[in-house]
Amino acid sequence: MSLKVKKADKTKMSIGNSSLTFLVRSTQYPVGVDADGEIRWYSTNYVQHIFKVLSNGHLLYLTKPDNKDLVYNDLLETDFMGRVYREYQFSTETRNNESANDKTETTIIHHDAIELPNHNLLLTVSDGGSKYVEDTMVELSRKTGKVVKVIDLKKLLPAELYETYKATKRADGKLDWFHQNSIDYDTSDDSIVISSRNQDLVMKLDYKTSKIKWLFSSKSASKWPLKYRKLLLKAADSQTTFTGGQHAATIWPTGEADQKQLVLFNNNMAVSNGDKKTSGKYSEGVSYLIDEQDKTIKKTWSYGKTLGKTNFSEVIGCTRKLTNGDYLIDFGFNDQGKTSRIVEVDPKTNKVVYNLTFTNFTTIGYAYRAERFSLYSQNYQFKL
Image (cartoon, rainbow, N blue to C red; front, side, top):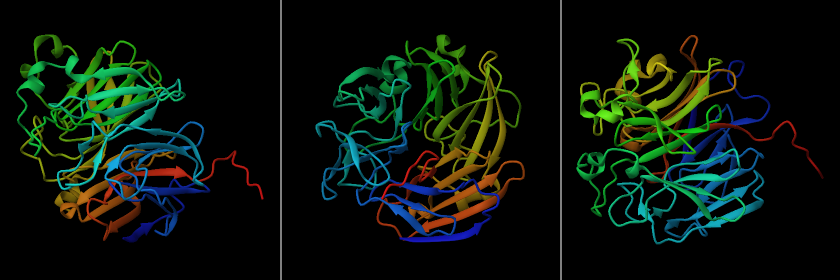
């Protein structure tokens, strides 16, 4: 692999005393690099998509029992030193091919996992049937490893979305009508925000009841069944554009009870309902202001449109809000998947303070996401 830093203003970057930029890859081992692009941490375990820091400071990542295995079915809780605290191994019976370019490796948990307030894990999975994939979530007991809750999105959304879906095709004939690629938890109202790439849709669910709170959809209101239309967020102005094939949606408080900040990576790839006029011309990191009472949404910041096709990412990518207010954006699939470009942007000026280019990786070894984690917390104690 090749890592090249084109810019690094360390006085303005959100790096603290020990933060690294972690490249969470679609396959093979993850790496943590410093502001100079030097690798300061890596795992010898291959990882696919899931790589998170838990509330206790441990890592949660999806790997294999052996790197030579073909199925990612081993979920580990470790520390940065590699000590294993919990391990969850899953049956390989419900495995799926995750990448259209990958004819060998398969996975059980496909895109995301989060820690809930009760410390259980919420995972993106398939329903276990022979027809549909990537449209179900399960809550896994942290203590026992048992499934304690199932959310099947086919039971929440109009049947026509999956029964007549034709926007994408899979070689195995299964329907990837939803393609959920992220989960985030909103502590203010016990809800989750999820992203659907193949419906060009972001939605919020009450976690206890699974009822839909709102829908941010590129699909016009007239094409939704009547009972869903009242849930649709309306653009607050003409500058507020909808998304296409988006990834990594996260929800943030604003200080106002009914107003939330939504941050995501807009691939701007019209899959089923996205804007076909702009599709493929650029990708962008975006922030929106949502009024959940009035059901309105307003774009408040974006970066990437002026870069055009240079940073267009047909698939993958993420936008992360950092502790100093900057945004870390991963344009993960540039040059037909040959390059990943990671930038840290100051939203007040839209100036880039960090610019990292990742190339010469193995097949589908690009940066699925880029994260900024502290290698050592303030409470970390060194013992000899």
